[in-house]
Length: 360
Image (cartoon, rainbow, N blue to C red; front, side):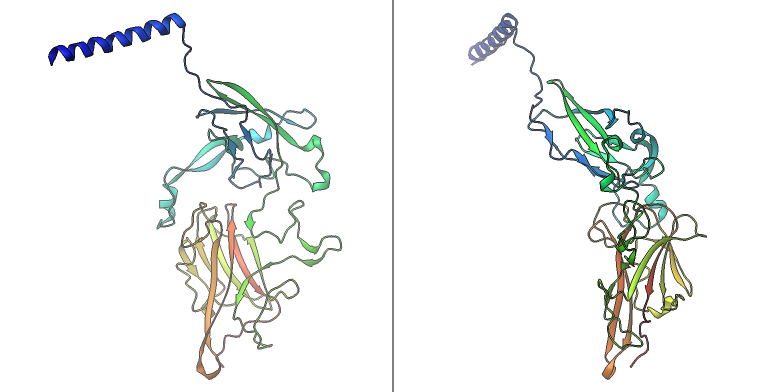
């Protein structure tokens, strides 16, 4: 057995030496990575919204060897002027631990992210482009109306792609930024001018209000259920900044027909303490206020506060005794997002008549 074993070892050694000699004689090339000529992006027009952290673009590597080194080069306007505004360094929040929606304090949220300096626009090793929420209308001029998108005002760039298999250039990407939309829904202002939006932009008639979701809300004068549609706007919503907060407050307020605040106590079925991922609730005779972290929602992750991961949910509820003593439950609200840090209020305004709270 020992002789057989020794023979096998000698045979294996001979094979290794022969392979090494052949490799040296025939000069086999070192194995290189593969860079496919078919590597591409499905879409080369990027249209981010300023003030939001957005992931853009999808790279088809076409079986190229990963990882790839990617670099944005030759950024220019349509008339050849260099583009520099997209690459300004600004502090932006980066998660260092996963957000779950279960955090109990603002401090716990703060411990999971930090500020890092990043260019407003950059490319990741995955091939995805990232446009950071630190961008703004002041830092980057947003696009004009579609009819005014002249080539000299459009920004273009190329993408240099490299691995040890070679280098290729993907040319003529275009990026057009929409002006900031600090909140969603945002159809109450014009996306190009930033001014009030109208149902008819030519005649400036019919303000395009945000509309609340309404369920079984009875009007005090008509005794009919309120509705919201293209012609009847009983309950409109304003998402707007307010003054006098601490810089990270969110208020919920309800106004009656006379624009006077309705006491939150009237909405006795509302789950004020668990409705939003918010802290340090304060309730006054005019509003309910919280401390929050921005953006809202904090991450594109489904949570109890944002079931679809993109919008937080408000639901204002109350009940009253209807005919025959049967308790009737009513509610209204809006699904929303806020992207800009500050003091914001969500105001529900009963434009035509107040809801009925009294029992029948």
